[in-house]
Image (cartoon, rainbow, N blue to C red; front, side, top):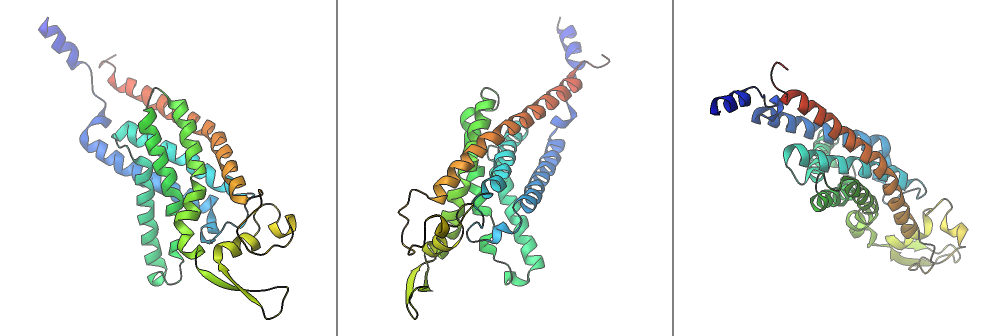
Length: 269
C-alpha cells in the first residue's frame, strides 16, 4: 500500500511556476509590467492634467481618473495577493511608479527646476490604491469577489477627489493672493488661492459666474458645489467600471485555473 501511494505521488508534477526562482522572476516581471501599465495609462488618460492645480473641466475629470483607479488598482491588489501573497499590491505598484517618475524627472529635467514635481499624481493615486488593498483583506480572494470588486472600485473612485485636493494642494491653496477688484479701480482684495480658484475657474460644464452671477470670492454658500457633484459622479463611475474589472479578474482566475490543471495532471495522461 505504501509503495502504491508513493508511486501515485511520483506521477503528479508540481507546476514549474511554483518554484522559488520562477516565483521571484514572475514577481519582478509583474511589478515592472504593472507600474508601466499604470504609467502609460496615466499618460494617455490623464496627460497634462496632472500639471493643473485645479481640474480645468469638472465635466470630464470623473471619466479620466475613475477608469484608471477603478480598473487598475483592484486588479493589482488581487493579482499580487493571489499569486505572491502580498496584501498591498496596488500600493506597491504606485510606490514603484513614483520611483520611476522621480528617476525620469531627474534624468530629463535639470534638477527638477523646470518640472512642477509637487503636482504629479502620487497623492491622487495613493489613497485609492490603499483602499483597494484594505478592501481585499476585508473580503478575501474567493468568497466575495463580486462584492470586493464593487466596493473597491467605488472607494478608489471617490477617494480621488479628497486625495487630489486635500493632500496635494493644501499648502498652495491656503496661501494668500492679492486680487484686483473688477468693479472698483484701484481696489484689491486679499484671499486664499482656494477662494480665487472656486470663483474664476469653470467648475462644471458652465462657469460658476455664468450659472450664479458674479459673486465675491467668499466661502461657498450655494448648494451647487462642484466638488460634491464631482465626488458623486466619480462614485457612480466607479460602480460602472466595477463590472469590467470583475470580468477581467474572473478571466485571469479562469485562465490560471485551466493552466494549473494542465500542469498538475498525472504524467503520461
